[in-house]
Image 1 (cartoon, rainbow, N blue to C red):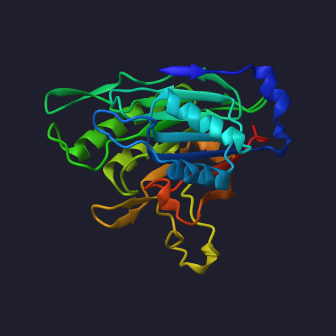
Image 2: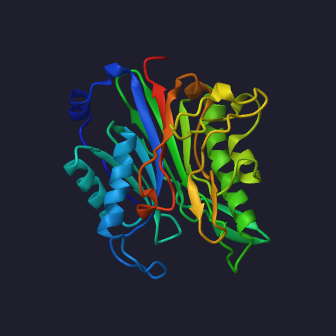
Length: 304
């Protein structure tokens, strides 16, 4: 696990948080590798890398969680290329879990004042011990002298079958471990500002999503970003969620589009949520960069 933190003073002097908003994104960048691995043989092409950067520029995030990033060198290459195009992320975190091919990472314009990577969490399934494959990234971010929040980023087990266990059961168990981390935060402090985001590889009504979101007073809020394509929520029946376009992933095996990437927030953070700053980027030829689309949610940092 590699981390690099720049000086706190530099960023506080360099960013103006008077606007009072922080934009938090997640993006599965699909095998963003700078060199082949044992099981993933293709390096990300220059054209695909450029489309990833274009997609991120469309969101203009202050903090972005990345899934399927390769080595630290791949992360730093992306970071440097974004900086050359006007998007500077001085702070970063890269987490290496049991899967040695693809990883979870975080880029931030604001200081990462604490990093608590989860790389050795495990669960039991059919009497066998499994480690959470990609681990979880956990960082605490400070936007100014009075507003901090925690980002917990995950990339759960894919829907592809494996010979060692049922993929759905593996994913549910990983989701359970993730929720346990959430509960540790919220039981210690119900007013904790917490963002839980990433590629959860399942749909809204699935057991893993119900497990992560939870129930009762400590239930997480699903920000449900959607395309900004002119759809008006008021046009839909009140008993339904708005029938706007929220899919985030194309699954070629089934030729299906579904929402499997999420930005969830704790009750305290939900009070700061800005719905009008929450959306999915829509750009031409998005699929050149990844089989996922990036999404962003905005939060007001002026409220305590």
